[in-house]
Image 1 (cartoon, rainbow, N blue to C red):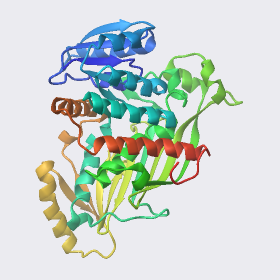
Image 2: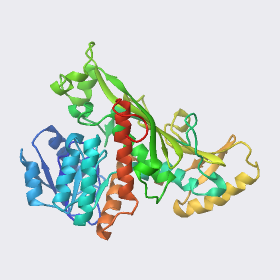
Image 3: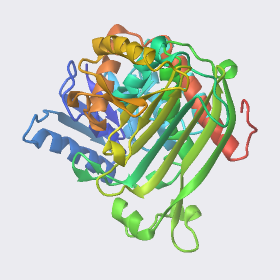
Image 4: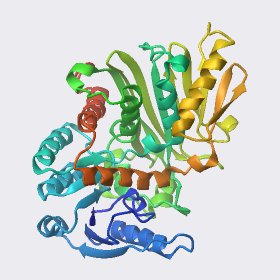
Length: 435
């Protein structure tokens, strides 16, 4: 298969090429305008090729210029196009790529507002008509503690049944903390200025929450074909800003001043307010869920982005924590609910481990107070950056077969209707329910 990269404005575009992908030609065509974002992408690819350990061997053919999108459409240089960058034009790029008869693997979010979702739905229909695939990059499905949380939730002897939950105690909670300043592939990440503009990057409610809403659907309703209108009800949503100082902005963008498009978000003290934070309360098929995302400028020393998650079952809760106690590594705990038999539950858990080990060899548990901590071999902790190659391989397998799972496209549509609908509610443009 031949790979094309369209307007790579986010480092995720490069991470898909951090290793060679089986079955993919080493020559990659890149279409973009000349500028720092293209240069940053090319530098990352060059660093992957030049590294001493397991170097890649990508050859890059760059088609740069103001007419890059027209040339991309006319030349159709690849079988699969990767789209990861400024989200303002993401839906347009997707529609253009599908119309050119190309399979599309797009970074999240594929849509940041209602108009974007409408365009995305048309693109899905067009992709089906043309026999090509369109999918987003859901790396978090490959994080080992999330996979184990899902696996144990499918074992009734341990988890029981997923509870319906309530507004006070949702059955499913997913919380994510991210940072504007971070390291990627061993170097400080350089953020484009538009990353701080919700009109271009997208509000926090439609950005990282895409992953969280996806995980709720993927873990709680595996294989289910979800329909937003009949299966999902948004109960409430809110958003709030992260304050960024001029010095912090300069540190991560390498720009001396704010560009004009950010003037609307500059405060009297000179700081920048970025609405990167949000929370959604909603129900999926009667199960109450809450997802929230928070962006800080920089993580404390020795830490990084964090994830917290709870799935509440009738027999046990499955909890992922990533605090100091866990050495800031995501760790799954199995916590039996009150009233569970003190002798029967350990036997049930031991039986469940046999099933889990069939999928994930070497998994074990250790008792910690009244709970069990799940022990994971180091080989499963491959890191977030490695998940991009796993996503790419899975998508290319779908391309080779000519189809995604039948639940994937309906799930994506439901997911983006949820995130953009929550934003409408948080902005006061629509009432809770079905925006």
